[in-house]
Length: 206
Image (tube, rainbow, N blue to C red):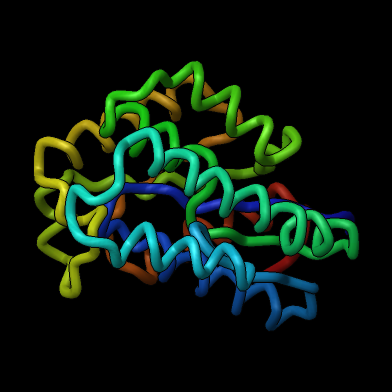
């Protein structure tokens, strides 16, 4: 089987990381070479940028600077982690990727979505996921699930409501890539949905 690139997207508290990890464990359990990673982060340099983005004081980073920090982390991550693993024939599973930048810095932060798409393309060298699972949940419910809030999570309910709108708009624009799941459902039920869909796409038995 050839390599495959799967991403999980969604607002805060939607369970992206949980579902990404469950899928990675399931695929490894049947002997498939699988790399689990995340954004921002995944690479040592990208992880340092993550700390700047998430741990800095509120309002300390301008919207435009925030955008370029995410893009810098992504460029490093794609070149050093994602592409090399895909070349090895691995299934790469990433919690957050290009759609998060459109939703957060575009819809949430008010920057040009067209500009962000162009810059995403430059940062990734045009690398698009094969499948994206959008874990959809309303902003208020998602934020209530959070315990330790970082700088991005503290941006306020209105901001996060716009972020959710952005994700859903992307799903409508790219329905062939983005599969929307109700993140309010039971974790195991969602995992079974994800696993069934991936098995169907990869033509594997799970």
